[in-house]
Amino acid sequence: MSPSTTQRKFFLLLQVLVTVAMLAILLPYYGAIFWAGILALLFRPLNRRLLVRMPKRRNLASLITLLVILLLVILPVGLVSSALIREAAAFYDRVQSGEFDFVGYFERIVSILPHWLRVRLEDLGLFTLADVQQRVAASASRIGQYLAPQALNLGQTTLYLMVSFGIMLYLLFFLLRDGATLSAQVRRAIPLDDASKHFLLGKFATVIRATVKGNVAVAVVQGLLGGLIFWALDIQGPLLWGVMMAVLSLLPAVGASLIWGPVAIYFLATGQVPQGVILIAFGVLVIGLVDNALRPLLVGKDTKMPDWVVLISTVGGLSLVGINGFVIGPLVAAMFIATWDLFAEMIQARSAAEPGGKELCVEAAPGAPADMTVADGGGEAAVAPSPLDSGAWPAKTS
Image (cartoon, rainbow, N blue to C red; front, side, top):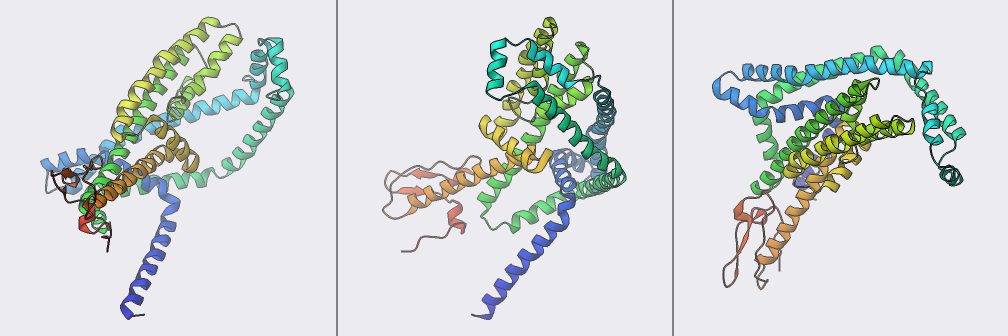
């Protein structure tokens, strides 16, 4: 084995080890780093406009952008979170005091079901009243067991959140100031041709912008509408339920209905038919319309992904990494589709370029430059430059 080969392999091994070690170091605060990157990407256009007005004052332009982010994003989220914590604490107190009785509500709903249906459901083992009571008691016990150590660790949790918030703001400032330079370095480090890098990085930025702006807009509108209808119907904790609807609205098609649906059923089951009908009509015609109208326009149109892919990738992302998954899930799905589209285009272009191959017209991958297409020249297939020609794919040897 030649020395150069040994050195190359050792360097690659060292690079892998150092990269894994760096990821392990960053992992405890990956949420802060993740959102710093997203906010920097979303507010990059504002930062660029400021740099046009003050080209030699990059620090000031980044600082102004950071202040705008604090006022428009972070401060409102902090205010809503503090109000939500107070309302959640009040709701928990009502549950503990017995004022809010899940078992009692369930009994009322079951009591209006036809006898034959109740018997059939119990025979199927779907539910029994004793079983529900046992599950509610067990759930309450688990919640208490979870909250007790959390209360003891409140100081540590607060310190962690403060450190994460500080890291996010600090990193966000430098990403705004030096984002263009870092982006250029990342592009140079990717071992692909310029056309492929442009296509994949463009898809990456487009999906993040569309997913965050679209899902957040839908969540805010649905949560606001849900909180308003709960307030109008005099349902306790409208802010709490509105925020829960906003969070669940990250699940396309079914999100907010997981909150207002059971409440409407309870209204109908307890004889409050007008309230139940109003809530169902509002939920289907207003809250549901927001999801059906805004989400395809804001998310699906830009990401160019089917609704079912958005739904599955969002649910999978939320299950895997928590709240950050509503961005990570669709992003991974979009990059998966983009890389396979690019791969298929490369294979088709290579097949058309081979001697004696069929004449065909290969359509460029979505978003790729026009010079990546293969045109029919009347005789032999005329192959325009593609990612293959710059070394992204090994040439076939005879």
